[in-house]
Image (tube, rainbow, N blue to C red; front, side, top):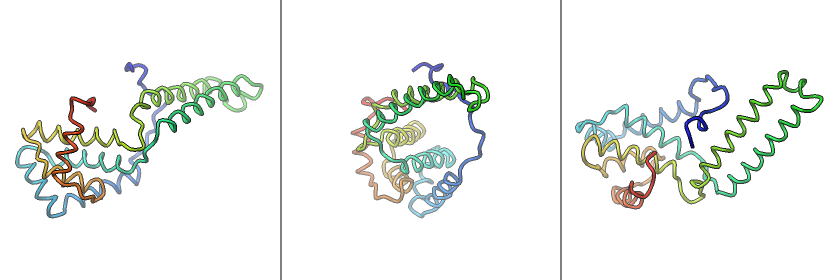
Length: 193
């Protein structure tokens, strides 16, 4: 997708972070205050990583771990409904009540363009949809793994797995499991986030 096609056609909402985001940031801060997590973070900091960068990556990972998996057929259904919605908006625009509904008919065009944009983005993301896999989570894990590797020259599986386990809700995520995940999802087999 080109940058022009990728640009949101609508007006971005100017809103502060949601309360859920604030709650997740507090959760990440509490994870980083655990004894084992503090040790892991301190070891990474001693080799050049920053607390702010790691906390931000863990926050993004935590947020992603709270999303719901979606199958390709669900994405297809959503795209069909959104495409139908575009046609409905344009039908209303061109009806005798169009001006009553939209005030300015260009608003109908704007809504239709925004819906088309969402359909295009859903079509591009469809190959990543899976009820069994979490590609966004994997991408964000790689952001952290790459940051640690590039900063320190080592993977630090013990430290990184401990921090990821805490960020993903306190799950048991061992260094061995993380090493296996790294091997299965190595960079040569997937796109960089």
